[in-house]
Length: 222
Image 1 (spheres, one colour):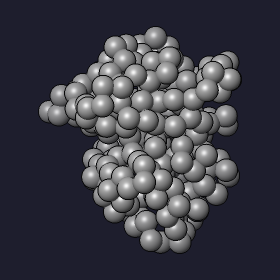
Image 2 (cartoon, rainbow, N blue to C red):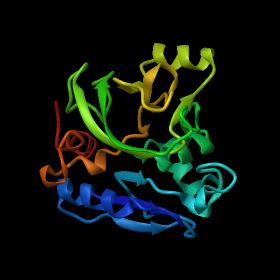
Image 3 (cartoon, rainbow, N blue to C red):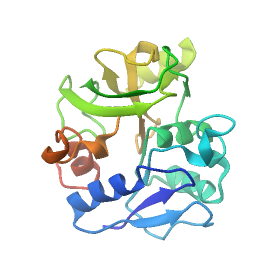
Image 4 (cartoon, rainbow, N blue to C red):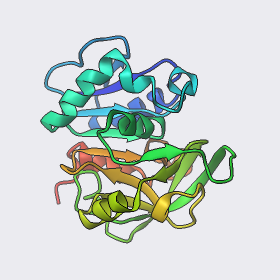
């Protein structure tokens, strides 16, 4: 299996992402610098990690959304390659238009670093088939701009089409309808604010994120 993690200036969860992928596949992903013009051929999975790309100048993910490598990322998404964007990666994916909505400042205007409870809204995606619908997870968060927002028409549409994948149990940031993670209409792109890559090892506090990587990386077939 061929995988890759994109690294932007200011990414700080790229090594966590790489370790989570290698834990499941046994093979380290390619680490792709933002200045490259193209990703490797025949990738089976791409991860856009968390951090503070370009120092969050303008707004979170705005400059990274126009970085050289991101143009090819969009092409891969449109071709159906599975892509996971976490935290700043989620912000980048909304900036490119690959995912609906936007991520605003947390409602309390404070950086949140904690472990939060999520529920699995849909277990019918390639990312969540290792879970059960309604299953409760504990996953770390670390963000200042995680308040998911979209207009009511968009929210109704993505809910009706099954694109809402995770919800917060106790909404920490004011996200509309408690939304913590969404997919695109095709279901091959997932963005979420909580960090599943930080929940794959018991020595780090839990393994509730492991099934996500096992699902998308082919270790779960049901």
